[in-house]
Amino acid sequence: MKTSVKDVMSTQIVAVRRGATFKEMAVKLREYRVSAFPVIDDEGKVIGVVSGADMLAKEALADGHAGIPGRLGSIVHHKEHQKAEGLTAGDLMTHPAVTVKPEDTIEHAARLMYSLQVKRLPVVDAGGYLAGIVSRADLLSVFDRPDGEILAEITDDVILHSFFMDPALFTVSVSDGVVTVKGDPESANLGHELMDAIRHVQGVVAVRDELAYPVEASIAGLYF
Image 1: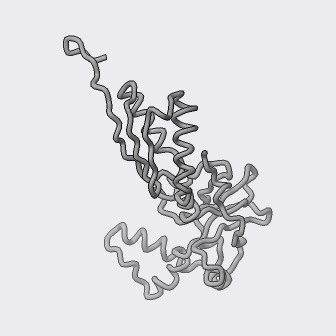
Image 2: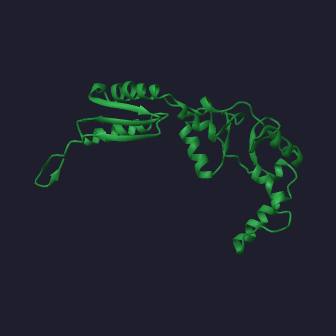
Image 3: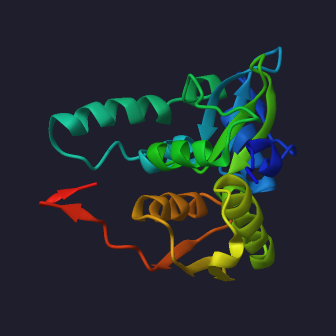
């Protein structure tokens, strides 16, 4: 089973227009307990994102100090003071917005969030219109999957149908998302491929590889 962004995203979206005022956004942050807003144009297409961190610059830099010395500090100081002086969503937003599509995998969304260090991503359809929002908590929800479902997918979908092997050749157990696999694969390569496939099953937290790998045959020091 492969989970897509559309399976975990929220369609209860709090978005703002480019002209939304600082005060309006501050009120919405508190009212809806969100950490960022997608910014949309008059057609409903996503054009940027305003985060609570973007808005915090107004309060943090009220005394005129960025707190980072040297040339880098002056660059950061200038950019952050531009944010601090912003009055609307258009002034404060990061653009273009980093977005995902409903059909993207949650792994793709997770990589984007991790690399960019963001807490949520707007979800847009093929036309660029806002379709939902996906958060870190949404992506981590796949780990709520019952152990029994994980075990069934490993034995039926992975071992039997993907690798065409008899599941009875292996002893597979799942506890709190941790999978333990025992058995005798025909080759070390096959065993490693099987373990890699199991690691990619949704809901798997970790895999304990306890396979009895065969010793590779050799002739005159050449391995094959």
